[in-house]
Length: 196
Ligand SMILES: Cc1ncc(C[n+]2csc(CCOP(=O)(O)OP(=O)(O)O)c2C)c(N)n1
Image 1 (cartoon, helix red, strand yellow):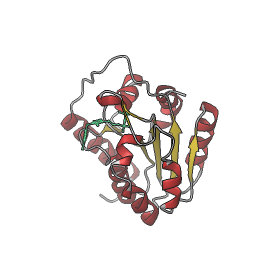
Image 2 (tube, protein in one colour):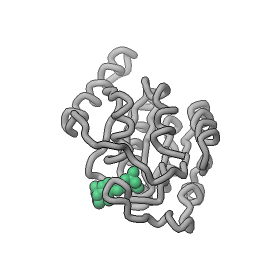
Image 3 (tube, protein in one colour):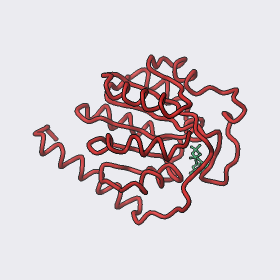
């Protein structure tokens, strides 16, 4: 299974949701499908995509938040699962693409490459009830649909091949992305009449 295929499968559902991705290959694969102002590609702050997602989900309970993470990133911030379990935002889906690699910086192996470290088990052990590991496209699609249907925090750990996009380059720098993302949220709040 490839991450790009999974993201393509998710893409139609992402139109009206707040999406936070890690940097590098994952961000590029989403961007290549067509940028939307409700997508935020977190640069530099490796490991913190789910923390940003948690902040968004708790402060914007009427929005659905989808975090697209990586194994290398999540391994740098394993405490995130305990924090997510404690606050249990019902409107957050945390997808971890486990390619066993730090792909975006040269493809060094991560702790999951050996198969010893099981990120879904860590999430469950931290107290997240709905944390599943999937390794084929059908199971991924089902897990994602289940997560969207569920009114609860969900974690999906998807085993994918260590393959990235064939080119890198986004015509969108971090500050512009952040301003447009913030404006998208503000406009939604105005449109739905939510107090700011
Ligand atoms: C604190 C910190 N250390 C290192 C980096 C450099 N870096 C950027 S992306 C990346 C690899 C991310 O790996 P993973 O989350 O598994 O995603 P993948 O690249 O495999 O899609 C690294 C090491 C960084 N941005 N921040």
